[in-house]
Image (cartoon, rainbow, N blue to C red):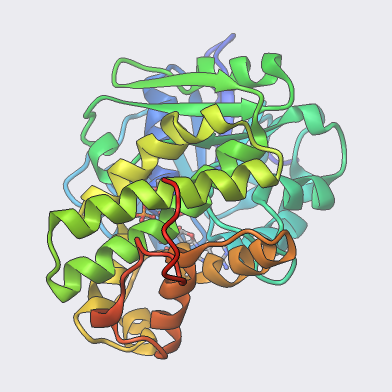
Length: 343
Ligand SMILES: NC(=O)C1=CN([C@@H]2O[C@H](COP(=O)(O)OP(=O)(O)OC[C@H]3O[C@@H](n4cnc5c(N)ncnc54)[C@H](OP(=O)(O)O)[C@@H]3O)[C@@H](O)[C@H]2O)C=CC1
Ligand SMILES: O=C(CO)COP(=O)(O)O
Protein backbone atom coordinates (compact mmCIF):
# COMPACT_ATOMS: atom_id res chain seq x y z
CA UNK A 1 0.00 0.00 0.00
CA UNK A 2 1.22 3.50 -0.81
CA UNK A 3 2.37 5.43 2.22
CA UNK A 4 2.55 9.18 2.63
CA UNK A 5 5.99 10.74 2.22
CA UNK A 6 6.00 11.76 5.85
CA UNK A 7 3.23 11.50 8.39
CA UNK A 8 2.08 14.99 9.38
CA UNK A 9 1.40 15.60 13.07
CA UNK A 10 -2.22 14.82 14.01
CA UNK A 11 -4.58 17.59 12.95
CA UNK A 12 -2.14 19.15 10.50
CA UNK A 13 -3.59 19.92 7.05
CA UNK A 14 -2.07 17.74 4.33
CA UNK A 15 -1.85 19.22 0.82
CA UNK A 16 -0.28 18.26 -2.51
CA UNK A 17 1.28 20.58 -5.09
CA UNK A 18 1.83 19.28 -8.63
CA UNK A 19 4.63 21.01 -10.50
CA UNK A 20 7.96 22.01 -8.95
CA UNK A 21 8.74 24.94 -11.23
CA UNK A 22 9.08 28.46 -9.91
CA UNK A 23 5.44 28.90 -8.93
CA UNK A 24 4.65 25.39 -7.71
CA UNK A 25 7.71 25.41 -5.45
CA UNK A 26 7.01 28.93 -4.20
CA UNK A 27 3.38 28.10 -3.49
CA UNK A 28 4.47 24.95 -1.67
CA UNK A 29 6.55 27.24 0.55
CA UNK A 30 3.58 29.59 1.04
CA UNK A 31 1.45 26.65 2.17
CA UNK A 32 4.15 25.14 4.39
CA UNK A 33 4.78 28.53 6.01
CA UNK A 34 1.01 28.73 6.53
CA UNK A 35 1.11 25.56 8.60
CA UNK A 36 0.36 22.78 6.09
CA UNK A 37 2.26 19.59 5.53
CA UNK A 38 3.10 19.81 1.80
CA UNK A 39 3.92 17.03 -0.66
CA UNK A 40 5.42 18.49 -3.85
CA UNK A 41 5.50 16.56 -7.14
CA UNK A 42 8.60 17.16 -9.25
CA UNK A 43 8.52 15.14 -12.45
CA UNK A 44 12.33 14.88 -12.54
CA UNK A 45 13.68 12.58 -9.79
CA UNK A 46 16.91 14.59 -9.51
CA UNK A 47 14.96 17.76 -8.73
CA UNK A 48 12.84 15.93 -6.14
CA UNK A 49 16.06 14.70 -4.56
CA UNK A 50 17.60 18.18 -4.49
CA UNK A 51 14.49 19.59 -2.78
CA UNK A 52 14.42 16.72 -0.27
CA UNK A 53 18.09 16.65 0.55
CA UNK A 54 19.30 20.24 0.09
CA UNK A 55 15.98 22.04 0.63
CA UNK A 56 16.72 23.94 -2.57
CA UNK A 57 15.33 24.20 -6.09
CA UNK A 58 18.36 25.79 -7.68
CA UNK A 59 17.03 25.70 -11.27
CA UNK A 60 13.95 27.75 -10.52
CA UNK A 61 14.54 29.53 -7.21
CA UNK A 62 18.26 30.14 -6.82
CA UNK A 63 19.33 31.10 -3.31
CA UNK A 64 16.03 30.19 -1.64
CA UNK A 65 15.95 27.81 1.33
CA UNK A 66 12.78 25.75 1.44
CA UNK A 67 11.01 24.96 4.71
CA UNK A 68 11.00 21.52 6.34
CA UNK A 69 7.23 21.29 5.86
CA UNK A 70 7.79 20.44 2.15
CA UNK A 71 8.62 16.92 1.02
CA UNK A 72 9.21 16.30 -2.69
CA UNK A 73 8.80 13.17 -4.77
CA UNK A 74 8.57 12.21 -8.47
CA UNK A 75 5.94 9.59 -7.54
CA UNK A 76 2.40 10.88 -7.95
CA UNK A 77 0.85 8.23 -5.73
CA UNK A 78 3.10 9.22 -2.82
CA UNK A 79 2.37 12.91 -3.29
CA UNK A 80 -1.39 12.48 -3.54
CA UNK A 81 -1.73 10.18 -0.52
CA UNK A 82 -4.18 11.70 1.95
CA UNK A 83 -4.18 15.16 0.30
CA UNK A 84 -7.09 17.35 1.40
CA UNK A 85 -6.19 20.04 -1.14
CA UNK A 86 -4.49 19.53 -4.51
CA UNK A 87 -2.75 22.53 -6.12
CA UNK A 88 -1.90 22.41 -9.84
CA UNK A 89 1.04 24.37 -11.24
CA UNK A 90 2.15 22.91 -14.56
CA UNK A 91 2.16 24.71 -17.93
CA UNK A 92 -1.46 25.21 -19.03
CA UNK A 93 -1.01 23.26 -22.27
CA UNK A 94 -0.06 20.18 -20.23
CA UNK A 95 -2.80 20.35 -17.61
CA UNK A 96 -5.18 17.93 -19.31
CA UNK A 97 -2.58 15.16 -19.76
CA UNK A 98 -1.44 15.63 -16.17
CA UNK A 99 -4.99 15.43 -14.84
CA UNK A 100 -5.48 12.18 -16.75
CA UNK A 101 -2.38 10.77 -15.07
CA UNK A 102 -3.44 11.81 -11.59
CA UNK A 103 -7.23 11.66 -11.48
CA UNK A 104 -7.50 8.16 -10.00
CA UNK A 105 -5.14 9.21 -7.21
CA UNK A 106 -6.95 12.32 -6.02
CA UNK A 107 -8.59 11.55 -2.67
CA UNK A 108 -12.39 11.84 -2.57
CA UNK A 109 -13.56 15.26 -1.49
CA UNK A 110 -10.20 16.99 -2.02
CA UNK A 111 -10.39 20.60 -3.18
CA UNK A 112 -8.60 21.03 -6.53
CA UNK A 113 -6.95 24.41 -7.05
CA UNK A 114 -5.50 25.93 -10.22
CA UNK A 115 -2.48 28.18 -9.78
CA UNK A 116 -2.10 28.59 -13.55
CA UNK A 117 -2.61 31.60 -15.82
CA UNK A 118 -3.21 30.20 -19.28
CA UNK A 119 -5.92 29.00 -21.66
CA UNK A 120 -5.88 25.63 -23.38
CA UNK A 121 -5.07 26.47 -26.99
CA UNK A 122 -7.16 23.80 -28.72
CA UNK A 123 -10.34 24.22 -26.69
CA UNK A 124 -9.86 27.85 -25.51
CA UNK A 125 -10.96 26.69 -22.08
CA UNK A 126 -9.90 28.13 -18.76
CA UNK A 127 -8.01 25.87 -16.37
CA UNK A 128 -10.97 25.44 -14.01
CA UNK A 129 -13.03 24.28 -16.99
CA UNK A 130 -10.39 21.71 -17.96
CA UNK A 131 -10.29 20.50 -14.35
CA UNK A 132 -14.04 20.01 -14.25
CA UNK A 133 -14.05 18.24 -17.61
CA UNK A 134 -11.31 15.81 -16.61
CA UNK A 135 -12.19 15.19 -12.97
CA UNK A 136 -15.97 15.64 -12.98
CA UNK A 137 -17.35 15.87 -9.46
CA UNK A 138 -18.55 18.93 -7.63
CA UNK A 139 -17.65 22.28 -9.26
CA UNK A 140 -17.87 23.82 -5.81
CA UNK A 141 -14.71 21.90 -4.86
CA UNK A 142 -12.65 23.70 -7.51
CA UNK A 143 -10.80 26.95 -6.81
CA UNK A 144 -8.33 29.21 -8.59
CA UNK A 145 -5.62 31.48 -7.20
CA UNK A 146 -4.39 34.61 -8.97
CA UNK A 147 -2.88 38.00 -8.19
CA UNK A 148 0.38 40.00 -8.30
CA UNK A 149 2.51 37.00 -7.46
CA UNK A 150 5.98 37.06 -9.01
CA UNK A 151 7.38 33.82 -7.64
CA UNK A 152 10.90 34.86 -6.69
CA UNK A 153 9.70 37.89 -4.68
CA UNK A 154 7.33 35.70 -2.70
CA UNK A 155 9.99 33.02 -2.19
CA UNK A 156 12.04 35.81 -0.62
CA UNK A 157 9.06 36.45 1.67
CA UNK A 158 8.33 39.92 0.32
CA UNK A 159 4.73 40.63 1.38
CA UNK A 160 1.96 40.27 -1.18
CA UNK A 161 -1.68 39.34 -1.60
CA UNK A 162 -3.71 37.10 -3.88
CA UNK A 163 -7.30 36.21 -4.67
CA UNK A 164 -8.76 32.76 -4.15
CA UNK A 165 -11.92 32.33 -6.21
CA UNK A 166 -14.42 29.50 -6.16
CA UNK A 167 -18.09 29.18 -6.97
CA UNK A 168 -18.40 28.25 -3.30
CA UNK A 169 -17.32 30.93 -0.86
CA UNK A 170 -16.76 28.23 1.74
CA UNK A 171 -14.27 26.48 -0.55
CA UNK A 172 -12.48 29.76 -1.32
CA UNK A 173 -12.25 30.49 2.41
CA UNK A 174 -10.83 27.05 3.13
CA UNK A 175 -8.09 27.56 0.53
CA UNK A 176 -7.47 31.14 1.67
CA UNK A 177 -6.90 29.89 5.23
CA UNK A 178 -4.27 27.47 3.94
CA UNK A 179 -2.70 30.07 1.63
CA UNK A 180 -2.17 32.77 4.22
CA UNK A 181 0.98 33.32 6.27
CA UNK A 182 2.92 36.32 7.60
CA UNK A 183 4.05 37.38 4.09
CA UNK A 184 1.15 36.13 1.93
CA UNK A 185 -2.47 37.19 2.36
CA UNK A 186 -5.31 35.57 0.42
CA UNK A 187 -8.60 37.35 -0.20
CA UNK A 188 -11.68 35.51 -1.48
CA UNK A 189 -14.35 35.98 -4.11
CA UNK A 190 -16.75 33.87 -6.16
CA UNK A 191 -15.84 35.30 -9.57
CA UNK A 192 -13.86 32.37 -10.96
CA UNK A 193 -14.16 33.61 -14.56
CA UNK A 194 -12.85 37.09 -13.80
CA UNK A 195 -10.08 35.85 -11.55
CA UNK A 196 -8.83 33.41 -14.18
CA UNK A 197 -9.16 35.79 -17.12
CA UNK A 198 -7.33 38.50 -15.15
CA UNK A 199 -4.27 36.24 -14.98
CA UNK A 200 -4.50 35.19 -18.62
CA UNK A 201 -5.04 38.66 -20.06
CA UNK A 202 -2.45 40.59 -18.06
CA UNK A 203 0.18 38.25 -19.53
CA UNK A 204 -0.69 39.52 -23.01
CA UNK A 205 -0.45 43.15 -21.99
CA UNK A 206 2.89 42.36 -20.31
CA UNK A 207 4.17 40.97 -23.62
CA UNK A 208 3.15 44.27 -25.27
CA UNK A 209 4.96 46.24 -22.56
CA UNK A 210 8.04 44.08 -23.07
CA UNK A 211 7.93 44.74 -26.81
CA UNK A 212 7.88 48.53 -26.46
CA UNK A 213 10.53 48.32 -23.74
CA UNK A 214 12.72 46.32 -26.11
CA UNK A 215 12.17 48.88 -28.84
CA UNK A 216 13.22 51.61 -26.42
CA UNK A 217 9.98 53.52 -26.03
CA UNK A 218 9.43 55.24 -22.68
CA UNK A 219 6.97 55.63 -19.87
CA UNK A 220 4.20 57.44 -21.78
CA UNK A 221 3.90 54.55 -24.21
CA UNK A 222 3.90 52.01 -21.41
CA UNK A 223 1.36 53.91 -19.28
CA UNK A 224 -0.91 54.18 -22.32
CA UNK A 225 -0.67 50.46 -22.96
CA UNK A 226 -1.30 49.54 -19.32
CA UNK A 227 -4.33 51.85 -19.10
CA UNK A 228 -5.84 50.84 -22.43
CA UNK A 229 -4.85 47.26 -21.74
CA UNK A 230 -6.97 47.24 -18.62
CA UNK A 231 -9.91 48.45 -20.72
CA UNK A 232 -9.34 45.60 -23.17
CA UNK A 233 -9.04 43.09 -20.33
CA UNK A 234 -12.22 44.35 -18.72
CA UNK A 235 -14.26 44.40 -21.94
CA UNK A 236 -13.21 40.84 -22.71
CA UNK A 237 -13.69 39.42 -19.22
CA UNK A 238 -17.04 41.13 -18.58
CA UNK A 239 -18.34 39.88 -21.95
CA UNK A 240 -17.54 36.38 -20.67
CA UNK A 241 -19.41 36.89 -17.40
CA UNK A 242 -16.74 38.36 -15.13
CA UNK A 243 -17.47 41.14 -12.67
CA UNK A 244 -15.86 44.50 -13.58
CA UNK A 245 -14.61 44.92 -10.01
CA UNK A 246 -12.53 41.76 -10.32
CA UNK A 247 -10.58 43.45 -13.12
CA UNK A 248 -9.74 46.44 -10.93
CA UNK A 249 -8.75 44.16 -8.06
CA UNK A 250 -5.65 42.08 -7.31
CA UNK A 251 -6.28 39.54 -10.07
CA UNK A 252 -6.71 42.26 -12.70
CA UNK A 253 -5.04 45.63 -12.18
CA UNK A 254 -2.84 44.34 -9.35
CA UNK A 255 -1.31 41.58 -11.44
CA UNK A 256 -1.17 43.83 -14.51
CA UNK A 257 1.03 46.32 -12.66
CA UNK A 258 3.32 43.66 -11.18
CA UNK A 259 3.82 41.82 -14.44
CA UNK A 260 4.23 44.89 -16.63
CA UNK A 261 6.75 46.49 -14.27
CA UNK A 262 8.97 43.56 -13.42
CA UNK A 263 11.94 42.13 -15.29
CA UNK A 264 11.18 38.92 -13.34
CA UNK A 265 8.11 38.43 -15.54
CA UNK A 266 8.73 35.83 -18.24
CA UNK A 267 5.98 37.33 -20.44
CA UNK A 268 7.54 40.76 -20.14
CA UNK A 269 10.96 39.24 -20.91
CA UNK A 270 9.64 37.41 -23.98
CA UNK A 271 8.15 40.69 -25.23
CA UNK A 272 11.42 42.53 -24.63
CA UNK A 273 13.28 40.01 -26.79
CA UNK A 274 10.72 40.47 -29.55
CA UNK A 275 11.12 44.24 -29.28
CA UNK A 276 14.88 43.84 -29.57
CA UNK A 277 14.35 42.13 -32.91
CA UNK A 278 14.43 38.43 -32.08
CA UNK A 279 11.97 36.28 -34.01
CA UNK A 280 9.31 34.31 -32.14
CA UNK A 281 11.22 31.05 -32.76
CA UNK A 282 14.38 32.55 -31.26
CA UNK A 283 12.47 33.84 -28.24
CA UNK A 284 11.07 30.38 -27.55
CA UNK A 285 14.61 28.97 -27.71
CA UNK A 286 15.87 31.54 -25.22
CA UNK A 287 13.05 31.12 -22.68
CA UNK A 288 13.76 28.36 -20.15
CA UNK A 289 10.61 29.03 -18.15
CA UNK A 290 6.93 29.16 -18.96
CA UNK A 291 5.62 32.32 -20.65
CA UNK A 292 1.91 31.52 -20.84
CA UNK A 293 1.05 34.65 -22.81
CA UNK A 294 2.70 33.28 -25.94
CA UNK A 295 0.20 30.41 -26.04
CA UNK A 296 -2.81 32.47 -24.94
CA UNK A 297 -2.74 35.09 -27.70
CA UNK A 298 -4.48 32.96 -30.31
CA UNK A 299 -7.28 31.54 -28.11
CA UNK A 300 -7.98 34.95 -26.58
CA UNK A 301 -8.30 36.56 -30.01
CA UNK A 302 -10.54 33.74 -31.21
CA UNK A 303 -12.81 34.14 -28.17
CA UNK A 304 -12.83 37.92 -28.65
CA UNK A 305 -13.74 37.64 -32.31
CA UNK A 306 -16.58 35.24 -31.55
CA UNK A 307 -18.12 37.91 -29.30
CA UNK A 308 -17.21 40.91 -31.43
CA UNK A 309 -14.84 42.37 -28.83
CA UNK A 310 -12.08 44.62 -30.15
CA UNK A 311 -8.63 43.90 -28.70
CA UNK A 312 -6.21 46.19 -30.55
CA UNK A 313 -3.29 45.66 -28.18
CA UNK A 314 -3.55 41.88 -28.15
CA UNK A 315 -4.04 41.86 -31.95
CA UNK A 316 -0.84 43.80 -32.45
CA UNK A 317 1.04 41.49 -30.10
CA UNK A 318 -0.18 38.61 -32.30
CA UNK A 319 1.12 40.40 -35.39
CA UNK A 320 4.53 40.95 -33.83
CA UNK A 321 4.64 37.27 -32.83
CA UNK A 322 3.73 36.30 -36.40
CA UNK A 323 6.43 38.60 -37.79
CA UNK A 324 3.89 40.66 -39.74
CA UNK A 325 4.30 43.84 -37.66
CA UNK A 326 7.64 45.47 -36.98
CA UNK A 327 7.88 46.02 -33.20
CA UNK A 328 8.89 49.63 -33.94
CA UNK A 329 5.49 50.18 -35.58
CA UNK A 330 3.55 48.96 -32.58
CA UNK A 331 1.17 51.58 -31.29
CA UNK A 332 -0.93 49.37 -29.13
CA UNK A 333 -2.65 52.11 -27.22
CA UNK A 334 -4.31 53.25 -30.44
CA UNK A 335 -7.39 51.67 -31.92
CA UNK A 336 -7.12 50.48 -35.50
CA UNK A 337 -9.27 53.24 -36.94
CA UNK A 338 -8.63 56.97 -36.62
CA UNK A 339 -12.07 57.94 -35.32
CA UNK A 340 -11.77 59.65 -31.92
CA UNK A 341 -13.10 57.33 -29.24
CA UNK A 342 -14.18 57.71 -25.64
CA UNK A 343 -11.74 56.55 -23.01
N1 LIG B 1 6.31 31.99 -11.85
C1 LIG B 1 5.42 32.86 -11.42
O1 LIG B 1 5.80 33.93 -10.91
C2 LIG B 1 3.96 32.55 -11.51
C3 LIG B 1 3.48 31.59 -12.36
N2 LIG B 1 2.14 31.35 -12.43
C4 LIG B 1 1.61 30.33 -13.30
O2 LIG B 1 2.00 29.06 -12.81
C5 LIG B 1 2.01 28.12 -13.90
C6 LIG B 1 3.31 27.33 -13.83
O3 LIG B 1 4.34 28.25 -14.14
P1 LIG B 1 5.77 28.28 -13.48
O4 LIG B 1 5.90 27.42 -12.29
O5 LIG B 1 6.11 29.69 -13.33
O6 LIG B 1 6.59 27.64 -14.71
P2 LIG B 1 8.07 27.14 -14.71
O7 LIG B 1 8.50 27.20 -16.13
O8 LIG B 1 8.85 27.82 -13.68
O9 LIG B 1 7.92 25.59 -14.29
C7 LIG B 1 7.16 24.71 -15.05
C8 LIG B 1 6.97 23.43 -14.26
O10 LIG B 1 6.13 22.55 -15.01
C9 LIG B 1 6.84 21.34 -15.27
N3 LIG B 1 6.43 20.82 -16.55
C10 LIG B 1 6.78 21.22 -17.79
N4 LIG B 1 6.17 20.47 -18.72
C11 LIG B 1 5.44 19.55 -18.05
C12 LIG B 1 4.63 18.48 -18.45
N5 LIG B 1 4.41 18.18 -19.73
N6 LIG B 1 4.04 17.76 -17.48
C13 LIG B 1 4.25 18.02 -16.19
N7 LIG B 1 5.01 19.03 -15.75
C14 LIG B 1 5.60 19.77 -16.67
C15 LIG B 1 8.31 21.70 -15.22
O11 LIG B 1 9.06 20.56 -14.94
P3 LIG B 1 10.60 20.43 -15.38
O12 LIG B 1 11.37 21.33 -14.46
O13 LIG B 1 10.89 19.00 -15.18
O14 LIG B 1 10.68 20.86 -16.81
C16 LIG B 1 8.27 22.67 -14.04
O15 LIG B 1 8.17 21.99 -12.83
C17 LIG B 1 1.84 28.94 -15.18
O16 LIG B 1 0.51 28.84 -15.61
C18 LIG B 1 2.13 30.37 -14.73
O17 LIG B 1 1.41 31.33 -15.49
C19 LIG B 1 1.25 32.04 -11.65
C20 LIG B 1 1.68 32.98 -10.77
C21 LIG B 1 3.08 33.32 -10.63
O1 LIG C 1 1.87 35.73 -12.99
C1 LIG C 1 2.90 36.23 -12.63
C2 LIG C 1 2.96 37.32 -11.64
O2 LIG C 1 1.72 37.49 -11.01
C3 LIG C 1 4.16 35.80 -13.26
O3 LIG C 1 4.26 36.41 -14.49
P1 LIG C 1 5.13 35.73 -15.61
O4 LIG C 1 4.49 34.40 -15.92
O5 LIG C 1 5.12 36.67 -16.75
O6 LIG C 1 6.51 35.54 -15.04
